[in-house]
Amino acid sequence: MEAGDIRLFRKGIRALERQVELALLAQTECCGVTPAQCHLLLAVEEAIEPSVGELAAEMELDASTLSRTVNGLVKAGLVARREDPANRRRQLVSLTPKGMERAAAINESCDRYYEGLLASIPGDGAETVARALPVFVEAMRDWRLSGNDAPSGCRVAASAVEA
Image (tube, rainbow, N blue to C red; front, side, top):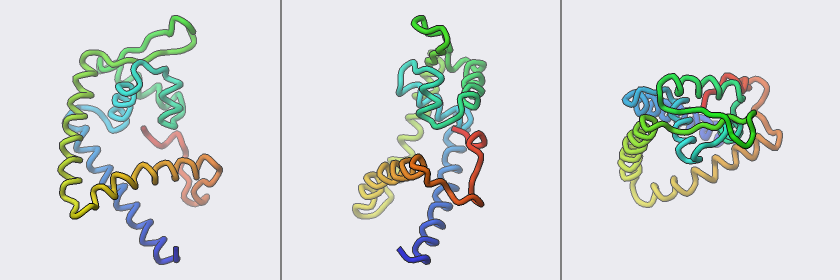
């Protein structure tokens, strides 16, 4: 790709980031959780009683950052945390009945939103986006994990990034 194409691509990524951020705020505001709490609720729902460490690894967050989010959800009555009977150092996280309801509400709301959004893309564009997005995300993750971080002027401390 040429420099102009890369700049145009980067501009698109920034615009996408802002649109996703706005969508997340709107989608989670109605459910009374932050975007970080939303991501964690859905990760717990998908994993079915993961450990705090497993969640931190999956979400690529520092365990202390994730623990703060878990604490907020425990206080809100949306998740429960318990000691793993097989390993007392491990903390397991599960959705409470209230958490299950909240996760279902988030899923229903987001499913409707994205179904409508994808339906508004002309032609076979929705299929192209749906197929390309996971490939792009995986490429970004693999590129970063192989040591190809953002340029030093663009780095953000990992602990500053929320779930």
